[in-house]
Length: 371
Image (cartoon, rainbow, N blue to C red; front, top):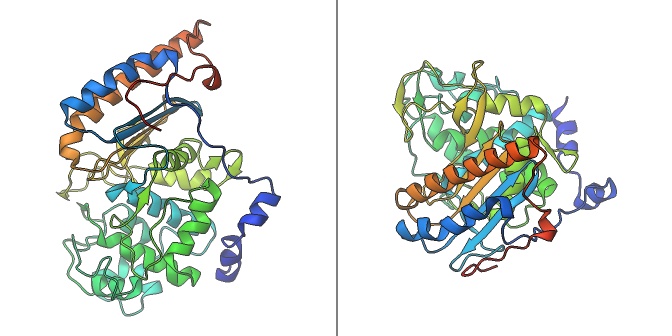
């Protein structure tokens, strides 16, 4: 497919999407938890209090149905917070949409878009950038600076030293995502903010989520913000193999590539999560025998933690902004309770003994929750 055709496919206006039946998503209505998940709602306040987390929100969806939607402190449905590293998942998805459109491939090398790239930096592939196996530097001062452009910052990063030869190790870092985004800008001849809006944000109705309109967004963290429900829609699309409300956002092949273990067997030069494998834009918290991620996550340092659990058909999003080290014990404990409830409800449904009611019949509004 030509670059021009790819650009046309990614520039369908919102009006055209609506004409094809791609209307804006309905607003979530549940506040609280369905009866089968009441123990999750009951224990969440104490878990957060123990972790000294005042402001937070939690979303749990199972089989496409919202079963818990909780707000604490000042947080409500419209609250936007910085996602920190959870932005990597959004960026990787946008880049996979560009691959779907035919403007790039996962094997596209940096030198194909940046002819000045030399040495080992010239042979870095898009897949290596998105899986932190490129060998690029751990940090660059140009990232997010308003007096630089994404293109200029990428050129600076590519001119720097590498930690190791491309594909020879794992180093979790931000600069590779700046280079990947700059590759997409060159391939599509459009700014990154527009690429994200047309590939991911508009199809999912993410009106409060974005990388900003500056010339040099930090694709890996920076100023990227989102809301509980909007990131939940994104996670639901991942769970549904690229579909959202019946429309195709990413190809099933793109989701399979995202879930493929790209780091097992490689030396870990730097990882904030030990030996946990990585796919494209997301950690693989669990993998099957074929090396396919069955549980994906992309935690942000501020406490924004999205998780997609394929075996349970579950989406879990925890929204907060502070120090993840402080909130992490509460997140882990809450997630464990959610998984127990999901498994219990699944057994009940299998036995024909479902104890949950439809969302609109169970508006379990809990004391002390806003929104």
